Image (cartoon, rainbow, N blue to C red; front, side, top):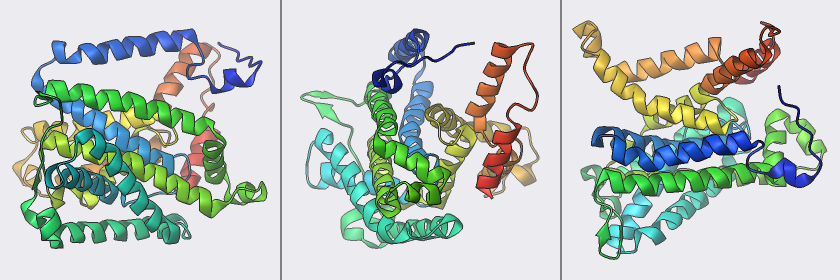
Length: 358
């Protein structure tokens, strides 16, 4: 068991609390670098989607997990980032490296504009308002054919540096995971700032946060803007990875899958975003494989994937509201405190999360 003895502020804001943590993360980065050499193209494609989902999940987790505002409209911000990058690189002939941050900024501006009125609402009403925003953006993409090509979709190119083009999934993989590392570090540092601490205070109790002088509207809007920026960047990466985007890539089901990521992985946790992204990226493959072993009358149903998502959400909210990362912490805590582990150690935390999700 480790005892934390912090003697100064720098110890509180350092990236890694223990040397062993830094060693493990260094080994993880080494494995990430070697993955294209060791794995086949199929698995590299899947890892690319995992990386894109991690960035999107971090964006939503900042808003929902750390600020307490549940959004069902992040597929729209994801789509705004994707179409912004596509238009900037294909129509306006700008470099991908310039279009990528610009796509995030465009999504952030739209997020702030939408967030200003929407964040006056709370709970279910806020979620419904963001869902309505998602429907509006999807309809704009379909109807504004002169800009987005409507239902015909938009062809996108892979990025390049000079004469070298990232045309293969293996080369594009390094762009994705370089940005995953950068975004994760930025995300962690945001949480250590007064702004990040204000987000957490708002999530825990808006009344208490306001009594301490925190401007709820300003910080909620800021959270929505930062969240939208991360989601827009992930959308841009998605567009250049898929090479073709259409309105069907950014519907309500995508917003639900983002929500599944943070609920299944663990709300209010960076590790939870990673676990959730892996789970959601692998789940469609698992559903496809399972169709060979279930009755045809079930396998041929159009809404099978949505039904599985809904069932998983219900099961996790009922039996494991802390998510996969919460389960990992319990296992870790059990072995650290064996044989003195108490069965009801997390009972109070579990009750709190269930009450918050009602």
